[in-house]
Amino acid sequence: MKYLKKIGNFLMSLVAPQVCMQCGADDELVCCDCIEKITIDSLSSAQKILAVNEYIDQVWIACDYDAKIVHDLVFSAKFYGSRNACRVLGEIMFRFWQVSDIHTFYQGNQFSFVPIPLHRVRRYQRGFNQSELIAKVLSEQVNMPISDCLQRVRNTKQQVKLDAHNRKVNVSKCFMAKSNTAPKNCLIIDDVVTTGATINDAARALKQAGAECVNALIVAKH
Image (cartoon, rainbow, N blue to C red; front, side, top):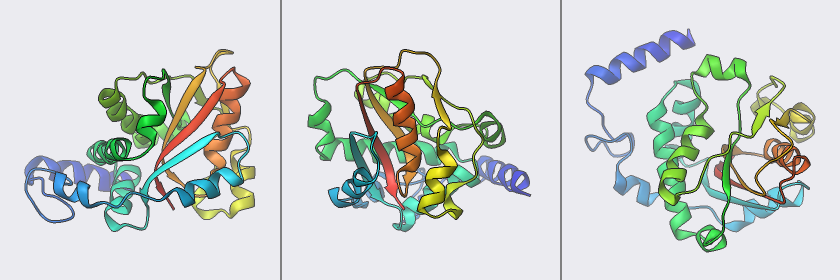
């Protein structure tokens, strides 16, 4: 049934005009004016993530998942196969980059974007990795490379239905570096964070492979 919905949405996109999902303006999934109106998140939620995860050095969160437009974009990317939604999420991340302290933090520093990988089974089912597409938008805008140094070695359960303890157990040691040499300065990219268990295990794998600093930039906090 999910595949039929994806095919139906794709066919509709070929014949129906693209309109902003927020205000109805023509030609964009989300228009520039509506992107500008999205409220960026405060530092408090990021600090809560850091407090319970030992491998991550710093976390930035662009916006609140409870904002309807953000929720709809993430949902469209994950469950309806919308690559265009990933592009818009990348543009939201770049807007955050421009107006937050992450811009000054990385100014003049060499680093690599590291998108959270999907297991090969889930990537095949979805057709793409949404975190990778978001990272590509940022990479093009800030002129920094994407590193394909991380792999997901276990096809874990979806985190959304698990409590904090089981989230951590579910993703424990599910990531592994593809070689013994990870970039020294890594910025993990992902779409949604709740407890931070996923990005923390990714940071563990990167540091075990030689990374010295591992930070994370997330679209939204659930």
